[in-house]
Image 1: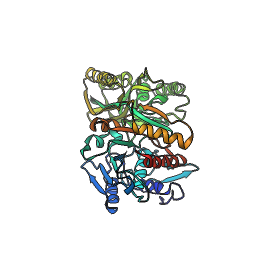
Image 2: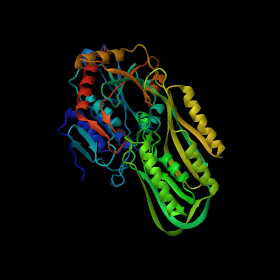
Image 3: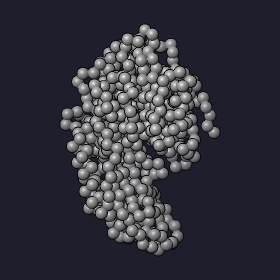
Image 4: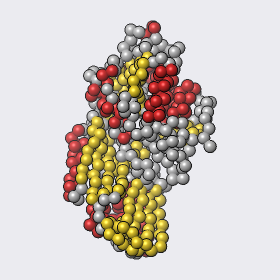
Length: 482
């Protein structure tokens, strides 16, 4: 039974009030109309200027407080959509249900599902700011975009000509004390292979690979977490005498999420052989991903003899060849910034649909030529296997700038508040900052946020003390904005 008011005791009160409201409104990617409408209604009730476009992006403008009318316009930006992942036994329907919030000490999470801290906390911060008429602030332009988690489609479609600001605070980072000053560009690549079937009679076996940690394919690609789709390909390739009827990923899949489970339904000629191979591969997987995916499980479930449509040998060989030869994970590391991933790709979506199987990759790189190289390798594989290749949702990198007024303001404020230096980093993930920077000449941007742990997984947790400290920093930045 979901109850409202779970976060009433938390501070900053107004921020957590709006965050909880957001968790009662379904807002997975491509399901943002309701949350967008809520933001529009919020603005209209307060007499604020508001625009909503066909993609459900929302722009809200608030005039400066009287003493700050001389200050330049400040843009605050976050995205409305969240990644929807849940445990197998969770009853939540992301299309219509509220999340079931819970608190545990200093953390907020959702029972059995992702929390949507990315980027619900940004929206909550902005709504709390807009709802406060007592604070001094420059002219504000608040931008809520949609479909960030599936290729930044909202930001790509946004008409930025209505924005007057040339300073942008992107609230889409998930590690307190780190100020982001650049990010990777990327693209989505989809490879589809044709399938043919034949009827096979035999004992059915369902293979499941579960218990992987998963995570965000940009910020956590360097953590050596297993990709369930790739591991399934390795397993099935090692077993003789199988006929694949179906292979598929989790019910909710995103190309920017490292897949944490994969399933295959097949007819097995030799039960003992597949049991032996599964046990051997599980041991190998656990050694390879020790410390990162210790909860990994490989399970086999057998049923009676039946007749099923299974892939022909040629189709099966093509699918397994692709899974075992596709690049995946880190491709290159930066030569200039120690520990920074320069380019990578992630097989996030695997679907069999009638006469084809599709593989969707999130490709990222801060160096444009590596993005092109990885996309080219996938295209070559597709052509070799008589498949098709499609590339969508290209987005630019956000390049580091030597001089930044916003960065200087943040570093000074952080030093004054905490007596230590704020770290300035670049991130191997796509942020909407790159799109805004490419559209608005001379735009000065920084990205920041509170601590969010295990982002995009069912273990996602929002740190309450970090939310409070980041809120206090944000208020100081707005107060001291030149």
